[in-house]
Length: 212
Image (tube, rainbow, N blue to C red):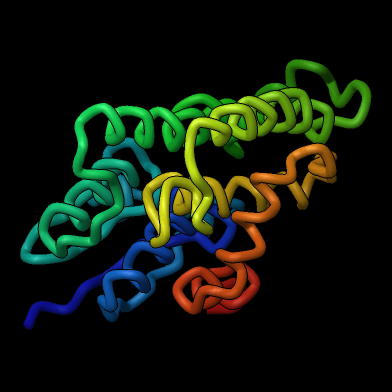
């Protein structure tokens, strides 16, 4: 069997999603650290893997895959992970929940975006903390409201971890890092507590991958 390799950075939200999903699928993998802070993502060897210079990149099944949401779709379809409901309307709603984080919050809170905003502001105020909190808290409040349309039993959209949970937990890690107030988001916090006790999520936590 071909070795599965994950090109990863411990604090990358998108990489964190992939670690959770690979653990849920029971897929063993070899992590290769791409140091984003040190600029390794701009090196020629990584640009050859992914011309966007981003992580994660996943080598699996003889393929080299990029973009975390696309990789999650591939894993879901090839490993029958059940990350989305079967009903088309429910699938669309669950995708919208996940995308509210992965498509709307995450890109503007990307390391490169926050660094650029800090440079443009000449370090005014508490940058990049102000920038992060400005986008993360309203986005998570919207996620909390969207959760009202689902029965947390006990995960975001059902009784098993799904795409929304995989996107939520890395964003909550970032929220806590930037001291975002989450106290008025009880549905979201209940999901976080359940996921924290799940082995696949626990094993993917950034603190366990910082020194790999």
